[in-house]
Length: 155
Image 1 (tube, one colour):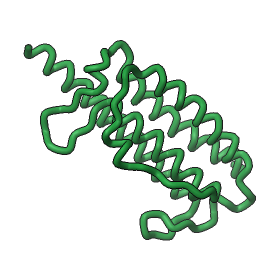
Image 2 (tube, rainbow, N blue to C red; image 1 turned 180 degrees about the vertical axis):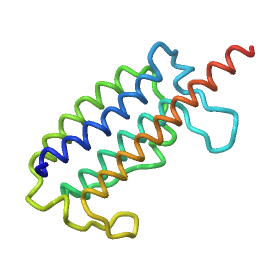
Image 3 (cartoon, rainbow, N blue to C red; image 1 turned 60 degrees about the vertical axis):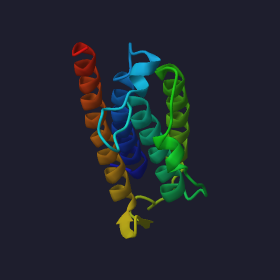
C-alpha cells in the first residue's frame, strides 16, 4: 500500500472513532452533553469530542505535516457546548483539511522518526497511537452516555 493510501486509511479509522463519539450526543440536551459522571476528573461527552478532535488535528498538523502550532488542553477539558451540531460541522471541516494535508506528505513521511511524547516513533506509529487514542475515547463516551442514562433513570 502506498503512503498516501495508508495515511488515508488511518485517517478514515480515526474519523470513524470521532464520528462515533459525536454520535453518542445525538438526541441529547445541552445539559446532557455537558453532564459529567459524579467522580473526580471525569469528562462530559462534549469534552471527549472536543478533546479528541483537537488532539488529532494538533498531532497530525504539527508532527506529520510539520506545521507550527499550539494546543490549549485546559480549554479542551473545560469546553461546554449547546449541541453536537456545531462540533460535528467543525469536525467535518477539520477532517477535510487533515485529509488534504496528509495527501501532501512528502515521500517517506510515514517512515520518518518523530519526537512524540519524548519518544522517537515513526509516522505510522504516530497514526497508530492517534487511532488507538480516538478509539479509547469512543469507549469513554459510550460509558459516559450509559452512566448519564442510568442517572436519569434513577431520578
